[in-house]
Image (cartoon, rainbow, N blue to C red):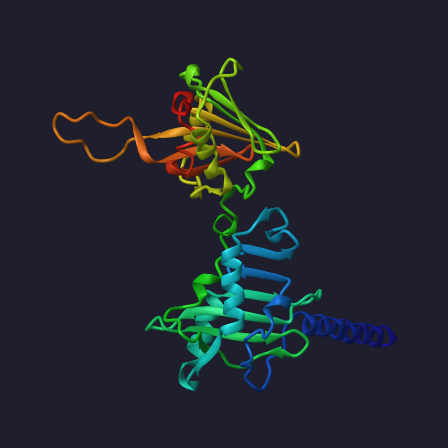
Length: 336
């Protein structure tokens, strides 16, 4: 009898602990709706953590250098600014009719994103459950949760003043699409000490530009010999380096195709040496022409006139617009 009593008390205690843990991990559903989604002062937002139903997640954190993605990469600053504007300007368009609440909640439970908004603390100040768009695509179903207070018992249809569209697409969980596409960013070109362009197929086209701290430049051929040049043309070729972005990370190639490309000699090798000692290298391959057949009697282009591939940051294969680097990749004869 005594053993049964001890066992019963142990089970009661175990059940109490389990309930306490469950209550702490599961937000309490409030008996009233929460509708104060907006963040009044977005300058206080220090972190944005987004997760989806497939387990993908994006962690954006504010630093002195700008917004950082997943503690590793710089994020696209303008996309984060778009989220901050959404936090500040979002408003309730209308409550969800009672007759539609169950359906809306069921759909949100199957395909929604959880957006945790931090304002300096270790815990989020607000959590948005961002669901699907309305049928007319002029609103988005959302639910609000406040840690320590609970989760709203009803969703709302949300929009923004002066904006016609849906808001859920802003809260995507693709790391590639959040990652900054910035390749070179030198507002003051005097930060660049050397620019070297190597053309493996035509070595006589290769060159090197040396730039002194005061901006004076010198031009050398592929053999390292100082050659005459037009200063305006050389400095003009360096201007695009003030801001160069790639278009996208190359994810469409199969592993075998990627390996084959990287085994080929690049069409160009671009090397930048900065005055602070840092170095950047980009290996560039022109993409084969895949457009329409030219008119009769016209030669077929060998390469795509718009895009090229580049290996940057040691291992990142990207697609770039050719015009971004067209001036810097010209042969040495273009400066004389």
